[in-house]
Image 1 (cartoon, rainbow, N blue to C red):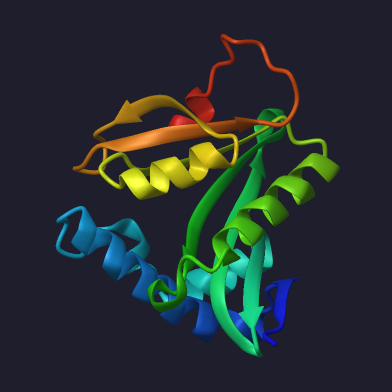
Image 2 (cartoon, rainbow, N blue to C red; image 1 turned 180 degrees about the vertical axis):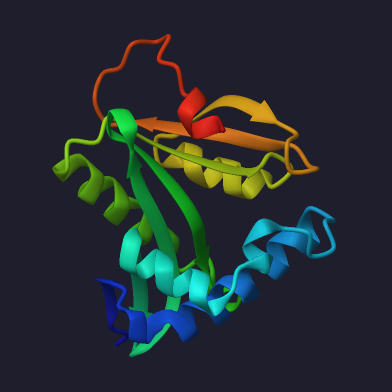
Length: 170
């Protein structure tokens, strides 16, 4: 029987998370035909260590090995911004991504966060569908990174329909 743990990452996990993020986002870049021009692929090991120290980073450990991770930070107005979410492409479809994304939602709800936001390539219909299955909706799209990205929102608390997400979109 496999053991799955969702734990806060520590700096000692940085190398494994760095390698995992790189592996996940190479696959992402290939699927959206960006030839590695994805911001996640330019980060360094020091960037990962900084995120572990300054943001909330959750790792998914399967039988002792880090196979998934997600990062989020809580911005002004109690809005969370989720980044670098990935599960090893070789073992996707086991439900580990769902465990991670729901862990973030639970932590954010406990902290009084109003909404969780993120970007994903709109061309990645499986990713968009995954987030929608978990209660996210497409708020808007942008082309600011050289490809069409969907800005997704999951409301945890009732919000004004005209809430201005401009702080997150910058």
